[in-house]
Length: 189
Image (tube, one colour):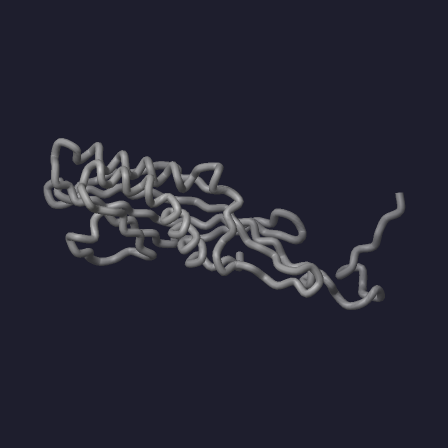
């Protein structure tokens, strides 16, 4: 559970940036000359020209061991998509289409095994150990309107399972005379 959730958010921001053409094509279908603004953390207020906005806030992390040399924390993030609704005719369609596009990118199997930015640990005997996304899931999306429908929001929880391999150097303990508690004995078959 050593991965910094800020680095997970920055990795997601880069992933969304790589898919900006697909995302902004969806935005421009409903609002000419606009593009999605992705923000780390929630903002109290945003100027009118900042919409559509996508805010990502870390919630919590839970850990489990994967093997003796890795752990797999599951991080939870709250994601809020907010759009300014200029055309009532497409209000619901706009927010749901854009939310579906974002969820599709975030949970696509093509984006698993994605290396997490700034999460490389040095191993003196084996080189670098990279931390990466192992799984990604959005369970449900809730929609709401603000100010008589002029602002629409979609909020969902995004789960990310991270694979954190440990450098081999963390497992090198003393010499061959170390107690068996630290260095297990090999059992002959």
